[in-house]
Every structure is written in structure tokens, then in C-alpha cells.
Length: 305
Ligand SMILES: Nc1ncnc2c1ncn2[C@@H]1O[C@H](COP(=O)(O)OP(=O)(O)OP(=O)(O)O)[C@@H](O)[C@H]1O
Ligand SMILES: Cc1ncc(C[n+]2csc(CCOP(=O)(O)O)c2C)c(N)n1
Ligand SMILES: [Mg+2]
Image 1 (spheres, helix red, strand yellow):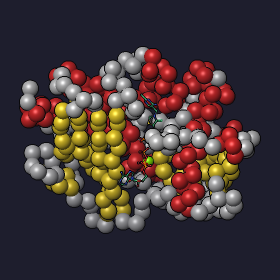
Image 2 (tube, rainbow, N blue to C red; image 1 turned 180 degrees about the vertical axis):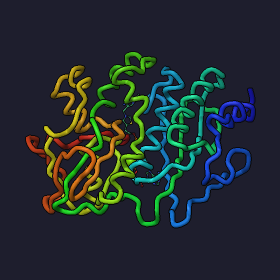
Image 3 (spheres, rainbow, N blue to C red; image 1 turned 45 degrees about the vertical axis):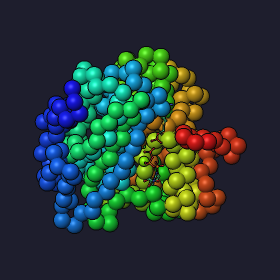
Image 4 (cartoon, rainbow, N blue to C red; image 1 turned 180 degrees about the horizontal axis):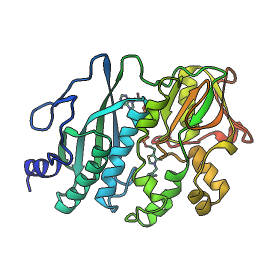
């Protein structure tokens, strides 16, 4: 199958390449075009997933597709944006039709759920599977939820259970084809688009948790020039995770594991989510009660240490 047949069959498929009111044209020309609503601004973000680092090539391609689009859409949720469309740069060693079919169906599952069609991309052959997705969304002018804006006196909230993504990793590494139980949150960390829109009018800052709660909270602290006091006992964790790895390891995963794709945000008060701490003026860093600063060093995922 040549490159152009592949694009037509698997990416121009109507399940994935469907009309959207803000997309003027998509696959087929040298560029795609999107037009935001009046009084809205475009926001966009890109994520790369590398075989062996962000997923295993031995997993079902459907599950690889759902994971790839969920984690990239999570950055739109982080800004309280509404998805419009995405572009896909796909590098694969071989064009296996069953692999491409599953991958395209996995993408389509999430694309339809979040009304975010594919609008273009690039397909190349290379020695390893690498998936890069750029998501495009819109937000009312000036209303994007930023990492700056947290104020002393605000409280810190998360949108749901933490630690499941990291807790699933051993299961995924052992049996990459099993997407049940905790692995469901690894393969489908559904982006919290609606949750973000619900908090957007009163949240002072926010982001999604991809690298681990503590490391990601440091980004809010730095951008907002504040500190935080976090109470680890109030961090929500699933019963499945605690059953599987015990409370202590579950807590470590929740604080530092990454792959959660939940939202963390600050607000004077809250109507949604679970409070896990407070914003303080000093010290300008993340403090966790019961843990000293040395315990917190080297916490969170980093590609280059
Ligand atoms: N190679 C790069 N060139 C330019 N900007 C970059 C590059 N890599 C990252 N950035 C920018 O740095 C900022 C932080 O990026 P980072 O990848 O940590 O955030 P993120 O996208 O929320 O995290 P994740 O990759 O876990 O989703 C973002 O504004 C991002 O656009
Ligand atoms: C197969 C496999 N899947 C997942 C992981 C965990 N992991 C990889 S990158 C990352 C942070 C987010 O990435 P990025 O910052 O690039 O968006 C995490 C938590 C692993 N070690 N192996
Ligand atoms: Mg992010």
C-alpha cells in the first residue's frame, strides 16, 4: 500500500475526518484551515509519543490510538479550551493494514467523543514508531486557564483520583495487550474538557498533571510566584490502586508517578473537585506535610535528568 492510499483509507475515513463547524477544510490540501468563533482565540499544543517511552508497540494499535489522542487533548482541557481538530505526524517502520485499521479506530473513538476530527498530518517510514499530535482548540478571548494567577489564600484542587496511570505501568509492561482494570486509565485517560469548562469562570490557575503532581505544581508556583502546602492524606486515590500496590506506593505514584492527565487548579473556593492543599505567599515552593524537602527532590518524570 502506498502512502496516499494509506492516508485515504485510514485517516480520511469519515469516522475520523468528519465535519466540524470551525474547520473550513482539512485533509487533501497543503494546509488545513480552521476559523475560531467570534471573540475567541485559537490555542494549540503538541505532544510526541515514542515507542518504548510513552507506549509499547506490542499493545493493541486501537489502545495506542486512544492514548495518543487523550494525552494530547488533555493540554486543551488544561487551558479550559474546546477542541476543534488535530493533525497527526506518524512515523512507522512498516505499513501493516491491521495495525493501521486499529490505530485509526482508536483515534476515531476519542475524536468523536470530544468532537475533534483529524484535519491533516504527515506520514513517514522510520526505524521506530513515533506519533506526534498537534491539537487545535478555541477559548473565549482572555479566558484561557493559565499556570499564572494563583493567589495566596486560594485553595488547591484536583479533578479526580491520582496515581492510576503510574500504577498501571507494571501491568502494561508485563501484558501490553491487556487494557482492563487500571490499564484502562493508562490507555484512555479521558481529557477533562467539561470539568475544565465548569471551573474556568472561578479558577485562578490550572494545568493538567502529566509528569507527576508535585513536579507539575512547581510549574504553577513558579508561574504564579507563590508556594503551596499540600496535605497528602486528602489526595484522592482509587480503591483499585490501593488494593494493587498498597497505600504507601499508591501515595508515591499519586505524588510523583505521572500519566494521570487529571486537572489541578487553584481557586478561592470550589464547586468541583477535591481540595488537597492551600496556596501560600512563602516559601515559594511545594511543601507536603509529613515529607521533607529531600524526599521531594527528583520527583516526577523528566526525559533528560
Ligand atoms: N522543543 C520545544 N520548542 C519550543 N517550546 C517547547 C518545546 N518543548 C516544550 N516547549 C514548551 O514548553 C512549555 C512546557 O512544555 P511541557 O512539555 O513541559 O508542557 P506540557 O505540554 O503541558 O507537558 P506534557 O508534554 O507532559 O504534555 C510549553 O509551553 C511548550 O509549548
Ligand atoms: C511504556 C511507558 N509508558 C509510560 C511511561 C511513563 N511516562 C512516560 S513519559 C511520562 C511523562 C509524560 O510525558 P511527556 O512529558 O513527554 O508528555 C510518563 C509518566 C513509561 N515509563 N513507559
Ligand atoms: Mg500539560
